[in-house]
Image (cartoon, rainbow over all chains, first blue to last red; front, side, top):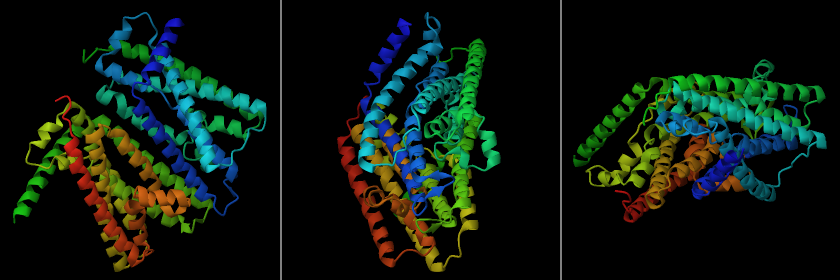
Length: 266
Length: 263
């Protein structure tokens, strides 16, 4: 455990080397949030309710989405593909550590940094635009929301690791093309631009069972109190099931990938 | 005559670079298919979102959803054109930090032209064609005057987009930072998917006078609906020429700061 804590610390420190890079990334995150927030604000002009969402609930959803995206989708495991493609993976294979845990430690350091910045940004945003934020309906909802967020972060980490693992078979552009393609789908199916339940019923019935819906959409639905007890339980159970599937799948793909790994580029 | 000869050289130079960009795409076919599919998905999901909104709402700040779809298509038109021609900017940072930009400075071709157009992104071409077809189908009955002002303002839009890319390249020469700057512009530009009028005053002012998103995307689209006065058209044309001239001055200034690091 101690060695992973050291990796966490090292990565935390290295994040401050490229400060401008990180700050620019945060600026972009805020701009993306503004784009969606002000679009919804405009849609609600002259409307009390759209798609069974009141203005305050929808804007809270948008803010919640921005917050969750910041640390669920912040992941360094994109570099796994780079290390596979250029052969740097060799350095890890000969060391007495788990490659998956190594990246989990780096991911957590990155998420912590994002959370700290996010807290400051959120304070400023609330101060400037004074959004109508809806509070969770009970403490238990808030607690389950936090639990769902942790599950979502783990799900995304494994998902991201899984996608990067396909670089073993297709190392072109460090595995970035597949990641780009999948991320374009995730962006929307996670509910980043709009809540998924505004989709036509048939589409929602399909998308609600796919992993992206549990990364952002469902955790915020729990926070907003839009799910009853049985729905919350089924949501958490589905998340746990996806977590297990993603873990098993990432292990299988990783092991198969290692067998064909040629350490090209070294 | 001399200018035509010069233009021909640039045309051949661009063709050569474009053909090389195309060959790279062919060499990595699966990657190209994945990138193109990702771009198409992004386009269709947002389009779908607008269609979903249309089922429940009639107007957003006075604009009908059919009009908003036109705004979205016009946004894509100019955004994709800039991606298609100016993809080179995404590689420019490397030239600056490795010092290979030196080689471009001694060649008898404008280093700025090279920096911006060195890569042509053919992956944007299918969506660009699709957008043009959709625009032709979706476009409302348009008067010859409307079409003329759209054509005129499209030139202003393209001139402004070029200016923005020149400014980003100049910032790159001075600070070695390019990638984030261009992405910040693109994040801001994404607010141009909708007319800037729908946003609150502060954002609208920012997107009109600080970063000219309105000039690039909203104003040409408005011309299609005949929503512009002559004063706005003239102001937009003058503004685009002014911004373009400023960007060239800034570029010249940036070149004096080039340190040729790592070369």
